[in-house]
Image (cartoon, rainbow, N blue to C red; front, side):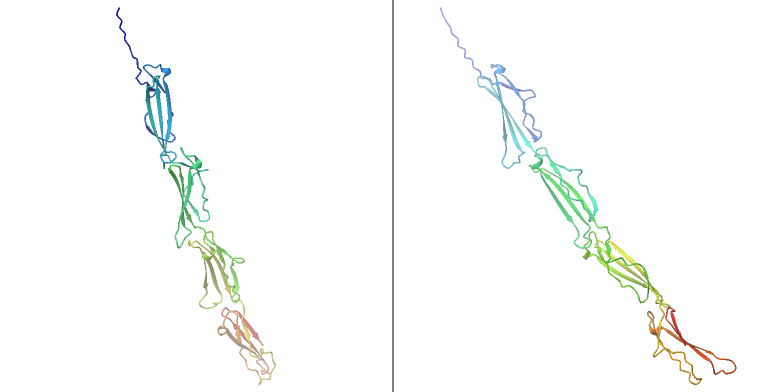
Length: 350
């Protein structure tokens, strides 16, 4: 009897095959809030039953020194191992980047450009911020103010440029700007020690003194407000020149040329009679002999408004005597009249 023996050496040298429902995951670059979920793989093998092929996945995070916290790589490694240690490996590299700017969040609405008066500048509010990768409390918010104003002249007209900037951990930033145009359009206010001077009618020797007010303003300091007083006198060139008007005008002007004025009209009148001034005593009534009639003296005169040399002094004599009989018995009535330039007059007679 002859015998033949065949030895068959069986080996498993074929790798198992990883299988993904949507195809093998490719390397991709994604934003930090768009990292895809890790998919599950299965495996088949030519020798090992499917339920005995072991599939493992490992995930590593790789960071470079100096990169921001949200810029990194994720390496996913799937390994299928059959019962004989043959393996199939697939590696997916996810490059994660933070490229999205944060968002400023305002309590009500974002500040808009406005034009305001210099005493009504809105307060500078502070927003919060949100970001797709950086927690809100880690977003840096900065507010800058740039004031542009002239160095001389109307320095209350200027602009304020407010800039709010939110910056996340990867230096992505977003900004909001508000332009505030500041104007000074309010007039200053005259301030009187007691009351503002009213229109008056006075005698020519009783003209009230010209007081000076102070002033305040919503934008210009008091010591920079210009206060001017003007007087306009209107009088006739002839005749009763003591009857005239004085128009006083006080004007306060701030540094932006806003001004306010107050006017007082003083009507000046001369209603006072002049006064006769005698060198001695006033001429008294006397009875004299016909050859002893006293001479007619001339007084001077004073007046509160008319200079003495402009007062008219007139003396009149009225003689009353009989036309028959003892015509040396008679009377002489002397009358002195002083008249100022406004026709106020005083008379003395004896």
